[in-house]
Image 1 (tube, chains in turn red, green):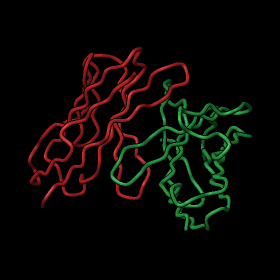
Image 2 (tube, rainbow over the protein chains, first blue to last red):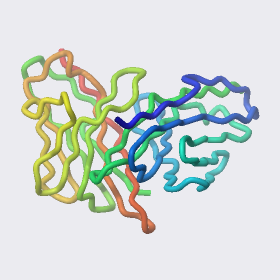
Image 3 (cartoon, rainbow over the protein chains, first blue to last red):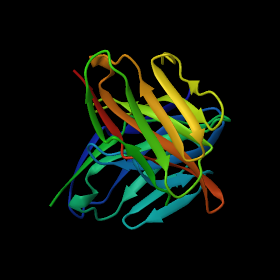
Image 4 (cartoon, each protein chain N blue to C red):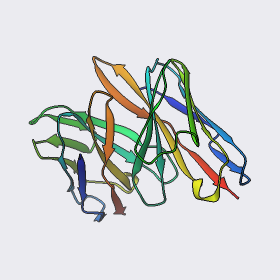
Length: 110
Length: 117
């Protein structure tokens, strides 16, 4: 059974304090690893897809990396507006099913 | 990026009634759409995979007769919660698979908050 574990469950940062969010996975046949941002009461907002180990993608203050066992979402100099829940999901199988981790709730204090 | 809409955003219904939720891909065609359910402070749980022109594939433990899914066109999938009960109250989110810039991505709608009284 595919498993996705995100850590820590919650993270509180001071504005400008860089950190990393972890997503470890155990799957058979990874087709892609997705990162999403979700604000309260809203649907997930697409951030990145990573397809192979060693791949990196960047968007503003966010950078996602992938190894054969885990992915990191690095947040550089975060701002209060980066506060949200960050979801990691793996895509497997012929039907492109996504399996989600429980998410990491990030709070950035001004 | 691709845009996915859902309607309604919120709905309150009485126990025993049925509710239909629409999911539309606005600027792309989606042969595959997915329906998820999310409880407070929990992650998304896949309910079913909806393929245009064929029957939906339901995840284990999801009652297909209670959660009716129809994917009649390449831009519209509907989820009907039949004979709703308070335990069906939840946040329902759809996603659509889009082929953009040479790769497939999954984009989510804004979600529908269902409250059954």
